[in-house]
Length: 290
Image (cartoon, rainbow, N blue to C red; front, side, top):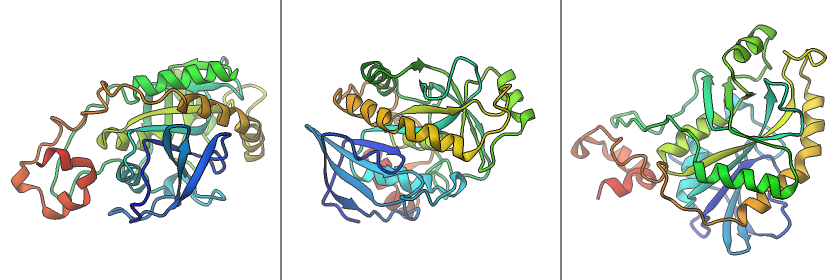
């Protein structure tokens, strides 16, 4: 692993988000993890006094499906770089009329509709159960909302994000089911990131960019890739402005539940934890094994 770079703030999103005005790239860092390779090399640099690491979630050129993402490698690598806060930027569909395409949302809840994904660092001889009632960091979510207002974006704070497997979009029956649950947004990526960030004791929040109304909406009864991409391109400059305004507000307090999520979560007796687990999870559990 290249250890020449470190970062306080991690940003996960589309390729090109690191082209923020004021960001000084210092290099690329390719990280090998015990869980395999992350989505791509990290772009590491500085924004003012803050050190930042960018990761294109789907790889540069958008090569990876949501189900193919190595979430564990992505978050482990962030932790190994020293990241304390993650800003996750992603496209979502709207399940309610008031969330219109190009609006921004900072959800505070998730519903899991994925299957077969790796959403924990634990197992193989070490058991742990973190609290996840409040799955995003209140401090990071707050500054994303403030950054949206400063940048002139239409912002909705709070809401429930349904994380589906994909890569297909919802059926009409599924879309109506999620609406009947009172859910607000639908996407394919952020839940596993939030779970793993909590296990890694990293503060995490999502900036959700609404690209479409999913298929429930009369007049929007089919979601197409060209529609999504067109809105994403329109939102790209706004997303960069929001991230710039958010990064300027760091550092943030670490008095949240994220910072010590593992304090009472590891159930396995220290003397029974396999040496391989101690080695592989050292960046995550090392502070509790001293």
